[in-house]
Image (tube, rainbow, N blue to C red; front, side):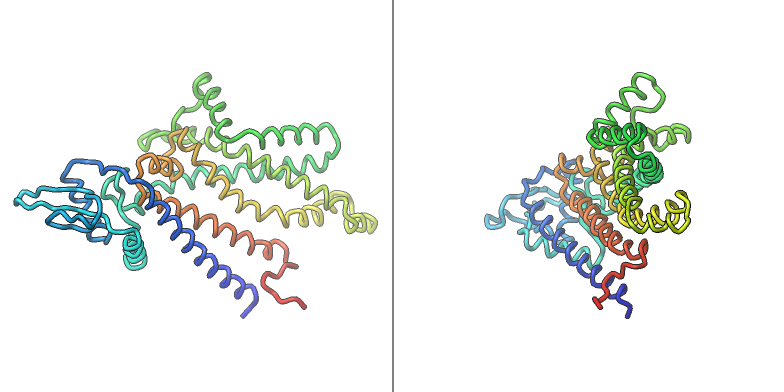
Length: 349
């Protein structure tokens, strides 16, 4: 079996183990938080508790039990019976949670955001807007970051380089939520060029297109600055190396040296950054989604914290965890793709 396959399988195994540990710790920490009162009318609350009993989180009794803790709901049924619902201990809930995931892919039900709805279905519905914005922002920011970085490196120690480097420092220093606030103030409220909130599903195609401008630009500013800085630094280092000087002495022109050797070698540490930046943009969009009213998983995370809807919160955190860990795996494997001299997992000679 090739070393890269062994290495990949080993890393995937460690990734799954790490995911399991993180989600286990997160489950216990979240479940120890004070819970919120159930929402909806009494019938809806009863239906929710019945589902929790089926999933293994609640106990249902026909009389009050002092040894089972606090009563979650007391329901008087039309047939004259009284039902008392109690929450099981956290350890038993954890066992039911794992059983539901591995046997039915059931991550629990929403208790407040959308009572009795599947937590996983809620996340899947909200995942698409987040992904669209993040992917568009990455498509916009990566080429611009490369262009400005290469331009600054080729114009090293000139006025152009100084201007680009100064703008990069400013763009990196300003948080994304400050950027989107300024953009909304200028382009939405003062000029009125773009909508001040995320367009609804019934909006026209033109309004939906304009709705991408503010969040994409706010997400791209920091990413463009990061790629510009790293590209300039790596390209300047490669251009001053001995092997490039040797290429020039052999008759290659400056442009040939830059295209054939300098750019390719400088991209080795930069290309994997694209994957890492995607995760950075995804986590950074949590605040932006809340400010711009984007129905993504970032704003959902904030809402579930406020509503104390812990089942949906757990799935949301699981999505962030898996994306982050898989991004790290792809970053490691991408080194061997970008530079064939790197053999991940190979034994030293």
